[in-house]
Image 1: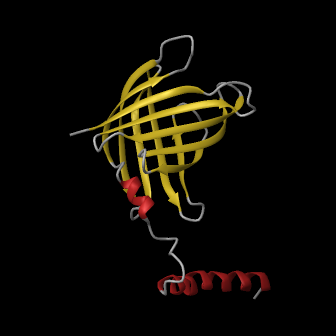
Image 2: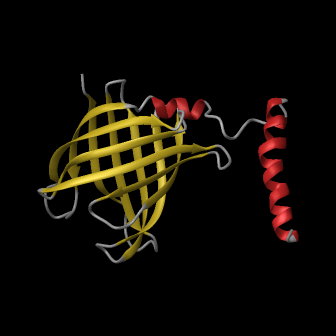
Image 3: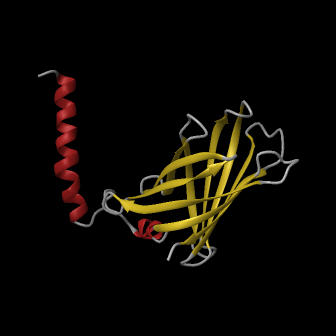
Length: 190
C-alpha cells in the first residue's frame, strides 16, 4: 500500500474510532453533537408572514413587499433551514438559507442564495442573549455596485411571535458610510 494512502487510512480510523471514545470519556466536548447554541437557533423555527422594505435607491422611498419565511431545524437539530418566497421590485423572489453553529469557530455560520444573484453569501455571527440579537458579518462582491462590500445583518427576536431583521452594507475599502439596504418584520403565522 502507498505510504501516503496508509497514513490517510490510519488517520481516518483514528477519527472514527479513537475520537468518539475520548469524547465519551468526558475529555472533550463532542463537536458532532448540537449544543445550547443550536437550541437558540431552534427558537427561530416556524412559518412567518414577512413585511419587507428594500432600500435600492437612497433618493427614493423603499420598495415595499410581503412574503413568507419558513424555517425548520434539519439534520438532527444541527442546522436551521430557511425558505423565503415573495417579491422584489415587483418580480417573484425566492431565497434559501442555512445557518448552524460551528463549535470549532465558536461562531454562527450562515449561507444564503436567492434569485437576485448567482453568488452564495457567507457570513459569521454571534448571539447576544441580553438583546436577543444575532449579528452576522460578511464581505462579498456586490454585482450591482461592482465593488467589494462589507455586510452587517442583525436579527432581533422581539417575542415568540415576532422578529425584526435589518441588513446594512458599506464599501469594503471604506469609501463611504454604512447604509441600510433591507428591513424585514417577521410575524409568526397562527
